[in-house]
Length: 167
Image (cartoon, rainbow, N blue to C red; front, side, top):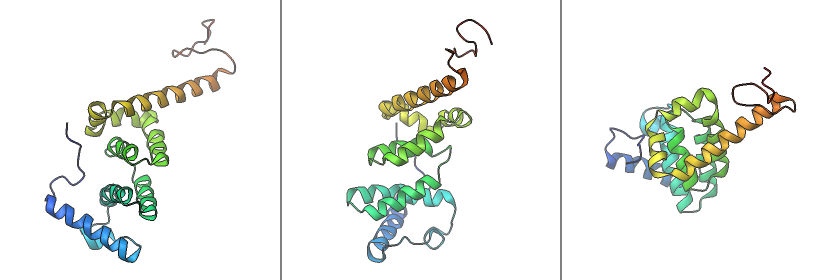
């Protein structure tokens, strides 16, 4: 299964040109170009799109400041449609704080079901089963913690009853 792309419908040569332009500008000026100037939009998805590619470059060339900027932009741009794919990207580039932010976002009950319906989640199932296991373990630990804090010392079951069957 191929990885979902945020550059859907964009000519690959133009995609590469945009990323290279952003990367070179950062290397010379120590700042990122304005998204409005480069892509004609300042939408959050555009910043996420560029940050994903620049994070890979920052990791490859050991550019810590660029890496930090990209991680920050990716944290600000967490969404249902991109979180699963970006979670895999964070693992690939050893961005542990970013992975933690994605785990917290995905594990929220209102987000989990929606994320499971995305192409990115399908990508995790097919290509990154270890990340899916990590996500499942995180959700289970979070659920156990929630149940324990509600139980006030009683052992709880998922149906909301304690061991004695009382509600």
